[in-house]
Amino acid sequence: MSWESTAVYYRLINEGVKARLGGLHSAKLVLYSVDFQEIEELQHAADWDEAGKVLAKAAHFLQLAGADFLVICTNTMHKVAPAIEREINIPILHIADASAAVIKGLGIRTVGLLGTRFTMEQDFYTGRLREKHGLQVLIPDENERERVHQIIYNELCLGKVLNESRGKYCTIIRSLAQRGAEGIILGCTEIAMLIGQKDSPVPLFDTTRIHAQKAVGWAIEGVHPNTDSSNR
Image (spheres, rainbow, N blue to C red):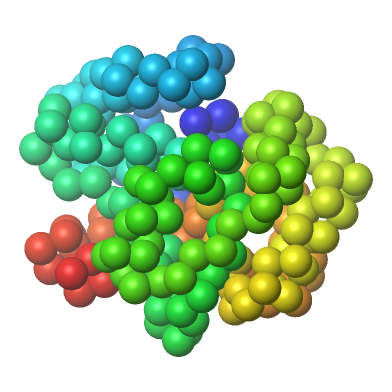
């Protein structure tokens, strides 16, 4: 939801379109950028109903503007995807489904998950990975989850990328790998600002990049959930 990762999405989608189509091609897209301060306050107040209303209204405007499908550029706010779906008639490209397809394609079945406390601890994300995609999901311990969460909100969402915080994330990643994680999901769209593959002993799955690449495919190929085998 922060503009920091929104800018990354915009760049990746346009780069993807250019790579696929060449020349001067760029992405046809409609962007609704929220005031993240308002969303963050609703998240930490656990007022998910109101947060859902805010994003559902935004999604409705995007549909009216001509969008063929919706990309929610955040992991955490997929918690309110059902509320959004009730207000629109276009499909949502779910970030967990896009990521799971890549993970399973590599034969990985046990993954570690980093993200906000909401994403790591609540069932809307881990439950979907387990029940829909058959993945075993490991999360950091309580103190580590709090550390991951605070770095996201107090640093990355503000554009701060600190070496000390990178070291903390690396330690947590190694711990998850030692517990059996065959790969790590960067389950917050800001985390890739801090961590790259060189920082991990196991494969990292950058949900921002995966989501953006899948969106390019949907846009160019006209794919939607009824014809996309990865979402069956």
